[in-house]
Length: 192
Image 1 (tube, rainbow, N blue to C red):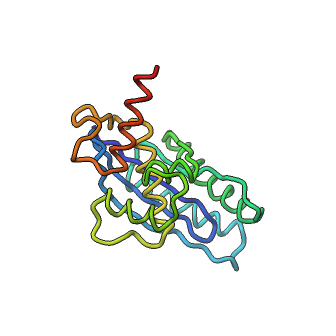
Image 2: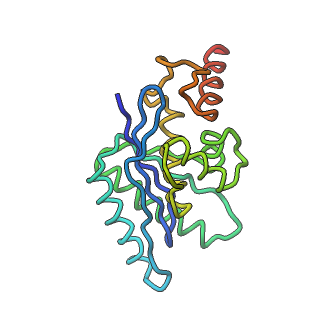
Image 3: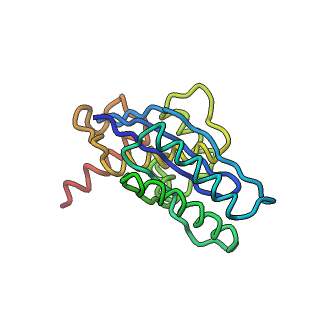
């Protein structure tokens, strides 16, 4: 079964959205990506409405099985955290209205899943998202690449019906990050 995940990198100014389909063998294919932008000159309610309407359209058009959203984490800039939290709330509520499950992932989890290191920079994430999805060019802007990375992360971490039963850890059909993830999952299962 193919798992369709809609990833969201929430933000008030730029909200990245990406949709991927992930097969049982963990092969991920990009369906669509984009960024919803709002102007800081607009009122908060208008900005959140733009995001709400856009996410409604994406959810209705792409019908994901699950939504993966970046978990808000503490930063020094409180106004940035508030904006991210508000945008996240709008997105999560839109999924809840449709009965779509929502998963939250930290930036470190996403970096570790996609690149093998939780401390990778945005360029490394974008480069590997491009490779994992077999894209001709990197998804731009970075918010869109991050949304795709969130979707990939969720599918791989959830097992997504994407258990590596048909290819197994170490298969040459997997990217290095997929191989490392599959090996770590197999090791964790053996340790139980």
